[in-house]
Image (cartoon, rainbow, N blue to C red; front, side, top):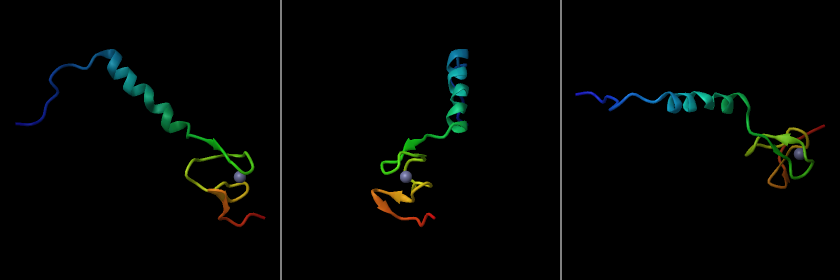
Length: 60
Ligand SMILES: [Zn+2]
């Protein structure tokens, strides 16, 4: 016996799931606490090289 869906998924439920694709296309951005530049969360800032109020990258 294999796992099988109990019932047909409604158009609304199916389309709501498919509508999530924009979340992958547009990455989340936060502004740097040091310079205010937009950056990815949980990553060092590309503009000033800081992470968690400490400079972790060498920026020219
Ligand atoms: Zn910064």
